[in-house]
Length: 376
Image (cartoon, rainbow, N blue to C red; front, side):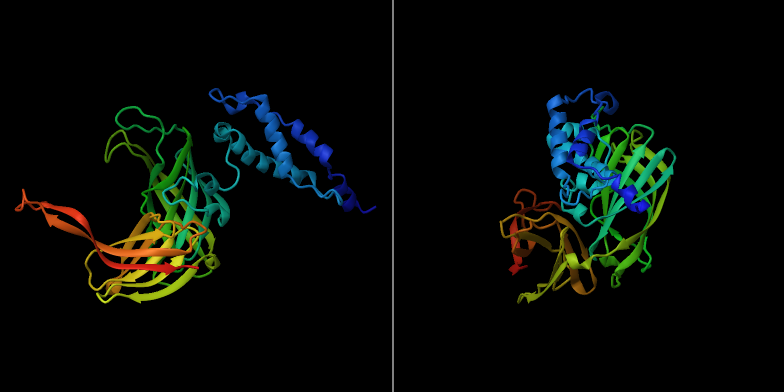
């Protein structure tokens, strides 16, 4: 008999054996430090039941290898616990994409985990371990997920001693660049990492960069380099209570660009007063609108979907030739059209303080462009 085949066959398991494996899995509350969480025997039974349902077995060929099955059961276990007992899930170690944990609760929610590549590059310095966990790029934005672990407890104080409930970890970067351009990337509007503390020693979060500032065609593959030199949990600006960790956490990682997930729509709609919508790019993570103004004055833009919901503005930049690029949050999957409005605040001088520099109040919007655009 072929030795390799015999070895593999000995690893095969059936449904009965898999059930035995799951039944022998012990969840020890004392090891997970679950003093404040109630985990019942009913929870454990339901978890095992749901994990088994999520492991598909080929009954005819009986070709599941035990090692693979146990690994799949472990992954399924983590996600099943989250559905059955969210409080227990908070105490478990993160397996897989950090994006999956935070993507619905960050400033710009989107399905990042669906498209992210796992890297898990680790750099440790001065008692802080930083893991560059996941990365993704759609040709317009670069999104990076991190896990930050500290030997020293993180603290968060604001007007006294309050819980560690911040969703932000400030960080300073000596550089953030790519290998195909001398220009630096432009960061998203959130300062630092956008995410959450999962315990007193661990923060998980993401950082967003825009590629438009590079002024070059984005290649299908490139290297991303970043050097973090400090991490800060803020109280107030320049406050001595700020918790600051200095160090050197430098990464150089490969990025594969997936431009196929972006939709480019040429619009070229222009009003008589000189405002125009040139193009729109829709990605799973953002809506990007390129426009042109008749002059270099400041104008506002808002975008409304076909359910009459305002898209969350992210940032905007002025370009050469009175052109502007505006970034908004992700669309719902069933959205078929967008309404783009360019406007300027309408001000009126207050009667009581006509000679004061701040004697004006907003009394509405002056609409300069209003166009509904199909994105199907």
